[in-house]
Image (cartoon, rainbow over all chains, first blue to last red; front, side, top):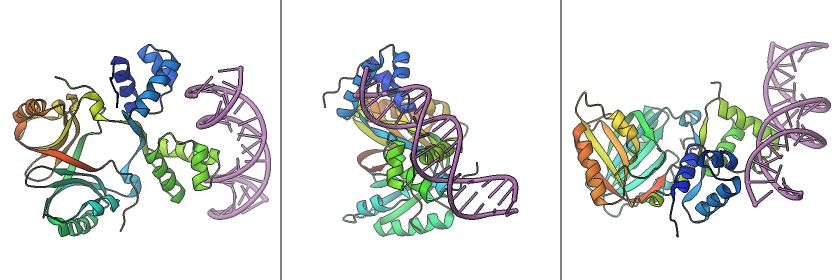
Length: 148
Length: 148
DNA sequence: TTTGAAATCGCGTATTT
DNA sequence: AAATACGCGATTTCAAA
C-alpha cells in the first residue's frame, strides 16, 4: 500500500489507461526513461495495487445490446439485491449510494422488451426508476490528478 | 462492420476482458485453437471495432480520490455542460438520459470539500442531486450475452 | 543475452457454388 | 472442379526479463 506516485508514474499510468498494450520502450520514449526503468515502475504499480489489471474494452453491440439504461432502486430494507446484481449479465455497474434511492445501476438491454423484463425482475427489490441513456459523453475517462 | 460473433469469439472476448495481457497461446489453450488462429480472430475483432482498445484499470485512490459520487443534473435547456464534462478530470462517466434529470455522471473527489466545489461548479448547468457511493458492487462487469 | 510472445508463411481441410 | 474460408505447424521478428 506504499504508493507515492510521482510525475513519472502519473504519466505512465495515463499512457497505460489509454493503451494497455503500449510497449515499455515506447512509454520510456515518451516519459524520458529507459525501458528497464519503466518496466520496474510498472511492476511496482502492479504489485502495490495501483494498477488493478488490464481489460479489453468491448462494444456491447457485438453481443446484441442496443440500449443502455440507468436504473435506480428505492431498496426496501433487508432485500438482498447484491447476489442478483453480481449474477445478472446485463447489470454491468452497481452502487449502493446515500439518499432516497439506495441503489443505482447501469444496465444493458437488447431491446425495450428485454429492458422491461429486467425492470420487472428488479422491482422485486424495491420501486425502480429507469432513465434510458441517450448519449454517452464520457465512459471510463482516464484518471488524472484533481484539477484543484 | 461484418461482425458475426461465434462461440470462439465470445470466449476470447470474455478472456480478454478479464485479462487483456493473456497470451494468444494461453487463450488458444483455453478455447482449443492454435495461437495463429487466436491472433487472427483478435485482429478481426479489433479492426471490426468489437474490441475498442485495451485499458489499464487504475485505483483512483492512487491519485488521492477518496470518494465517489453519482450526480444528477436537471439541466436547463441550452446549457452546454458537454465541454465542461469532457474537460473536468473528476468526471469519469457522463450520460444524457431521458426523464426529469437530463444528465447523470460519476464523479471522483478527494474529500468532501472537493466534492462541494465540484457540485458548486455543476450547479451552473442546472439543479444537482448528489448521492455518495457507499459500496461499489460491480464496476465494468465482463460483457457476456444476455441471460434471456 | 536469452527467453518468450506475436506476426508471417506455406500447406491442408472443409464447405460452397 | 474451383473458390473461399479457416485452422495448423514451422519459422522469423520483436519485445521483455
